[in-house]
Length: 196
Image 1: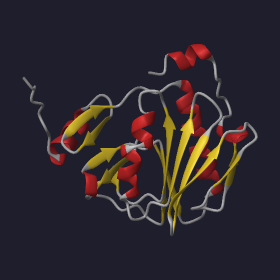
Image 2: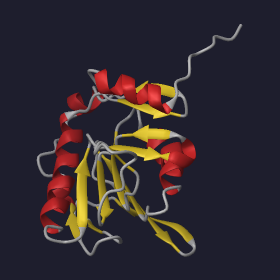
Image 3: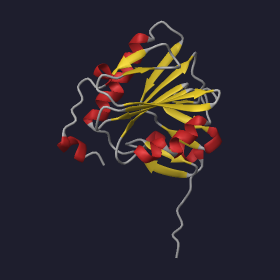
Image 4: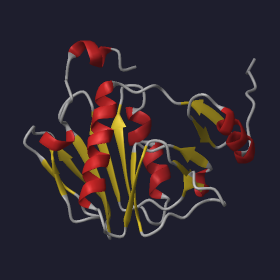
């Protein structure tokens, strides 16, 4: 016997999300509670956000971190990327300023519980965004960044694994070294074991 699960409309999700005590994603009718982050996750996302925000100051870009929601209409997905960059002004889904639709760069900090989803289905959803040009997957358990850049031939992967690596962004003319990206991060076994 198969259990039936309730599905929600995007409107029901948004109404519930306004009252929720924690963030949830919406996946084509399903509401999925987001897992809590580790200190490494927070350090990495904060470092990238701060670096981009400072380096892109007075340029036509907007940089957002964790709390800004993204709507992906083709796949009926609401999600909260760790870091997003938008060229020009954000395009909102309605009169509010909580949900955007037009990032050109998205970065996700990988955790054990989300890394397969972030690299698989979520990346497929992100690729359906017309403005999307670059996707960064940042490992929080070791020094590693996977960078996907959109080219005329498709999505090109560059894998950085050295502690001395420098990630060269394609959507904005910037480079960020692992020293800046991983500043304050400890690859301590005890903390990483709790990242479920």
